[in-house]
Image: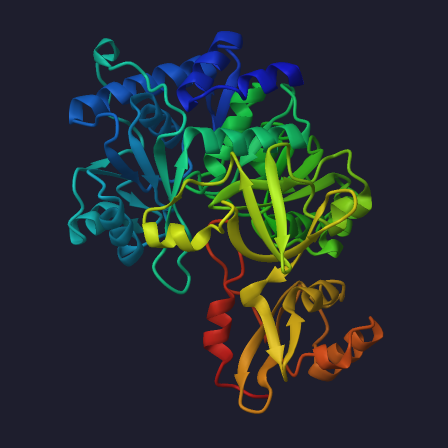
Length: 503
C-alpha cells in the first residue's frame, strides 16, 4: 500500500466510507488479531453490518445516542463500526469508570441504549446499569445483536454531523462531553498514520482501552494502510509479551508509562531483544522525559516517536522516524498539514480539522475557544525554528513559590536522569510562608538506593537547577497513582495526600 493510496483513502468523508474503500482494496487481509482469532477487512464490514441490522431491529436509528462501556475486544470494534454504519451517535465510556462517572455520562448524553460486558474483571457492569437506572441496557461481549442487513437504511453521508461523544478524565470534577465528527477523527488518525511512515507490512497493537479517543485514531491507521493490529483486553507485562511475539508486532506503545514498562522488562534480559520484530515504539498522551527516549533507543534497539494529543484533538503533533534524534528526544514532533498552532503568552492554542466540535455544554464550548476559533489547551509550550513543538508544562502545573513561576516539568525531566528514580511527579503544596512549596514524589526502580531530600537537592544543583527551584519536600512511594487509560500520573491525588504534610 503506497502513501499516495493511503492519502487518497484519508479523503473519505465518513468512517463507513473508509471501511468500504479499504474492503474494495484488500478484503482478505487481516485487520484485527486477538489471541487465536483473526478478523479480515471483509469480515469487519460484514460483521459491522450485521450488528447494525441487529441494533436497527432494537430501535437504533440515525442520530440515536448509544453508550457503550466495553473492553478492548473484536466485538467492541464491530459494535462501534455497526453504529457508524447506522449513523448513530455513540458515546464510549472507559471500562474502569464506575457509578458516578457512568451515570453522569448517560444522563448528559441522553443515551437511549447502553451496551455493557456483563461481569468483567470482577465487576458486574449489568448490575451497575440497573443501579443507575440506565435505559436500553444490553450485553455485548461474546456476541452482538444481529439482523437482516437488507433492511438497513442507507449509510450516512455527512462528515460534519456530531456522531461521537468522548469524555475527559474528570479527575477533579465531572467529566466534559467532547463532541467529535467522523471528519475530525479521520483527520486525527490520518495525521498519525502519515507521520509514522507505516506500511501494509507492519503489525500494530492496541494495548489501551478502545473506548479511549486513541481507539478510532488507531482504527483509521489500519484502514488507511491496510495492516493489522493485535488487541489486548488486558495489558500487563510480562504476560502480554507472548501476544506481541506470537503475532510479530512491529509497532507498539501507548504512552510514556508503556515505554517505561517495556524498558523495565528489557532490563531483565539485556542483550536479548524483548520483541524480536519490534522496530518502533510510538505514543502520546503524557509528557516524555528525554532520558526515557534515550534509554529505549539505547537498550531496546528500536526507534521511539512521541506525540501530543488530547481528547479534544486526538493528534496535534507527532514525531516522525526521519526526525533527528535530538528532536525525537526533546520535542513532541511537528504538526501535520492543516493543524495550526498558536502560542499566546506561552500557551498552546489549536485550530484545524482534527479539533473537536466543542462540548455538550455550550457554556464550556464558549470558554474553550478564543475569538479566532483556536482551542485553548491550557498547555504551555514553544515552537522551534524547525516547527517542532516543545511542551514546557501546564498552566495548572506551574508552581508559584514566593511569586516565582516554576515549571514542574523542568524538575521532573532532570530527576528522570537520576539512576535511583524510576518515575517522579513534582507538585506544589499550600504553604503559608511561600504560597506553594515544591514536593517531589518519587517511584524508585527495584534495587535502587534510598533517596534523601539532601541527596536529591545536591543532584539537582549539580545539574544546574536554580536554587529557588529545589524541592523542599521528598516523598518516596511504591507506585504513583495513575489512571487506567494511558496510565497518566494523577497529581491531584498526590496533592490531596500530601497537602497537610511538611518535611
